[in-house]
Image (cartoon, rainbow, N blue to C red; front, side):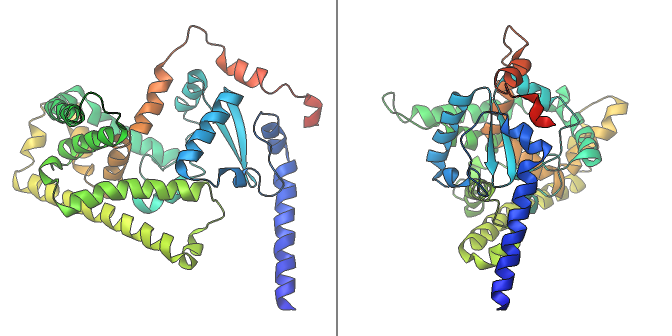
Length: 337
């Protein structure tokens, strides 16, 4: 009898939440956008429970069909996809839209509250702290490393032969990861190719990325449910163990190196006096728990860099936003009342 009451109570909560979140003003605006048909309660969840490759192809298909903006429902969670560079630029350049939502919560166990995952005041603090690290004197210092690793990546691809079809993503990912490890942390992964820790670290990055995608398209899997999903929990703990263990090892080695050398490497940057303290802080604190994660995850994933590149592809017209929200909505505003 108790079980029946519990089931009925659960059903009542689900139905109530569904009615509220799918009939309020926000839902009406979201539903005015084009997108695949959503079923009650589950939304579009059933359509995206497919292997990663198929999921990528499906998103490409929807993107082409509903360009430049469309919506999905992850149960009662609305997700809007924008594709035009001008629309993306508006969001990326806005300080008002930096709160992190769907998907980011699965990164906290790895990235903590760094620049990628933080919001509001903490985001502004992290962003201000990071800016001096992109000073020209700092970047020029590492150009040799960038050229060396880029040439190594080109040689790796060239060695496969001219008539070979090859997926460039692993090579690009490996190259960017090697560059950031050697430049920011002073550790060459190239010379440690046979080192199990380095190899496990690279594999763990890809594994944690797969886990994040898996859980993002399954928002019903909450953290406490992992205790009832031993395989997923084991994979998550294993990946996080390699990621945190490897980076902590590098951090401790670099911190000890700077202490033993009297921070001479940082002093050799020859920056202006008003910038020196900031750059000193960012380079030293980059080895801390927060900023090291942000640096690694951003620069080791070319998909993130590619997203920013799209925003630079300016078109001759600047009406994309109004076109996106005008052509595609076309709904009767009486629905708002």
